[in-house]
Length: 391
Image (tube, rainbow, N blue to C red; front, side):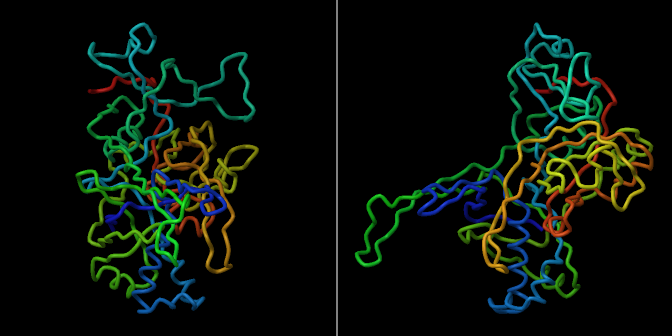
């Protein structure tokens, strides 16, 4: 399914907003999976029951919660794009640096480095026992480029070898943030109230091309599937009731590329890449890993892995409002999209991971149904880190 926002999409971050908290509402660079999952369940619930008070039935609400939503991923001209991996580095070329020897084109402007765990040098120490650090060789100030990568370029990165070439034409930026200034109106006099200005932000998807949110929806009822596929929908998504067009006709390819699946068979080292933010019981650490040994088995596979290192971005807050309690939901910390976890394979065949391609691995089942923690898999420890950028 593809979702085309008609208006700037409001996806608020965790900062408070209101008369007492502040006059500026801040927006995330990309909506959380729960925003889209909640909007879809509301849209489908109203369509099935034909009335707005359908959600007063707890049994029906529990049924809606069984809907599994994977995404949202970025869709640009009907092509999937993914968040830039956290173990990617790019910097302006310093001809006197050690990394410059990897440049083949004298006119190349950047050098790219793939961060991977390496054994700790003598005299070094870490407060996370058992992990190897990711030590960059680049010493220049990084210039990471755009935040979204085309699916083909991400696949090359996941292959873990020198088949990867950074292509600027296969990257796009996140939607621009549009700000709107509002004023409070006096109900009696019908004029603006002095000093009562406030600002809202929204993601503007009008870039001059076709941009959308891509999701995969798994429904527990075949009749619901027919109902969802019966038409193109117009329904709000995110805050402030901003409208979007929901097109169930777009399917896309959500399976592991064949080349990557073939390379995974028998691999001794794999890494896990987060395509959407994840919620883990151990904070930054997946709950299926033992906190002492950093070893664990992935549910539904024959694999047992040991964590060697991780490239994890700064945590992101997620909250919201519960209509069941009712009241505000507690703030939780998300592992951001693009984070990478490096593993040694202790036993089992990594080819089993093909079944987990773009599947949610968040520890809580409800978070997984919302689409938190979609994962892709790759290989590491194959070759040297640096690679020349193609202009």
